[in-house]
Image (tube, rainbow, N blue to C red; front, top):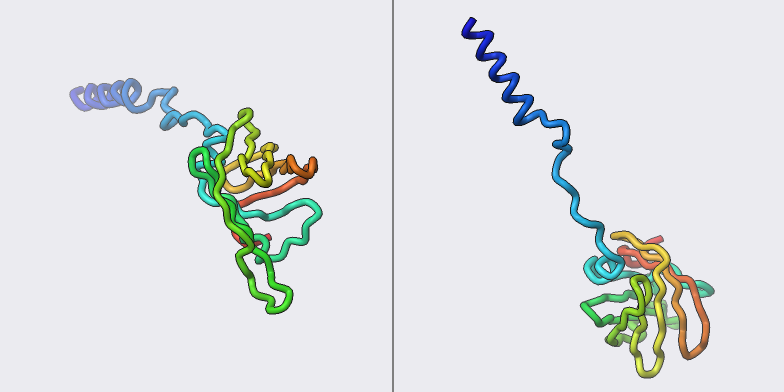
Length: 147
């Protein structure tokens, strides 16, 4: 009789303590915002830019965000030597215009990025050149020089 009581007690404790039907694991935190995904996931490498020939060297071009600043580092393949060379690098402030759009405050060549989709590893956006009044689609990812 004592064994049956012990089994019943253990079963009841299990039902109330460990076997709760609403215990589906830890509650997930809120999804990151677009701004958080842009700024907190490291360098974004250029994988595609509309109407541009993209070789592996060109695909090492990157944007790196730090708060309200972005550093761009552009690379190109030298036609004579075939070497991958740094084209230019610059750091500019950015201004968020909406949840998915920001302006790069470059005195010589300001532009806007409108993010169409983003996750931790890939971003698709429209790149709008204010000077040229031209929009190009671009894709950035976390892998330099890869397809």
